[in-house]
Image 1 (cartoon, one colour):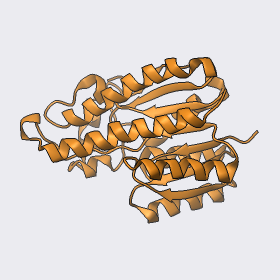
Image 2: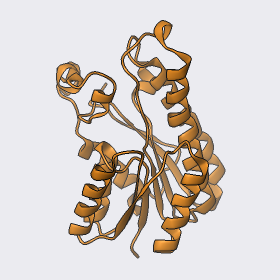
Image 3: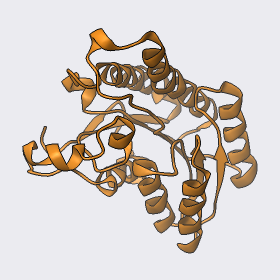
Length: 243
């Protein structure tokens, strides 16, 4: 049976890489994006070129009705949802906590925590036995991101807590909930944080001597979505090069 996977933040970076690996398996893909319509269209074109079916839909994860509509459209298009990749998230420019404005913190927390909870809630309402939710957290939840992104790290700590709690709530229904925690990965999130060269600059300090790639994270997500991970729930898989 063909799986249907819904991915938030699916137009770029880890979300895009996950969408393309889903397509390579022949899975249907619902691609959510916040702003970059061109990137989403390009991702969908590659999904379809691989012979898979999909669609794109704009929507901010902070917007409850937009997310409900996204899930409704996915079910209407493909009849079911088998997996949800709760991936959308943001980072603000490098800063110490003492310099962070309330507006900055509210935007990070609303997107990375409230948005993640809304998506997880809709997934929990719709997935059935055999379904899989993969939350994209971060190694920052363990490391704290001092002098850079403590607000981002804290938001991902909340995602970790939600992963544990939701995995227990849904276990009896056969729905698995896990998280991946990427470390330093080559994506454009660093540019949005004001450090476009961060992966290249810091990569040599990792135990494996380099930054990771979006595909390396996506491969872990695909495994968690697959039936091969059927006895894995409440788990945190660090894709962080040993850090």
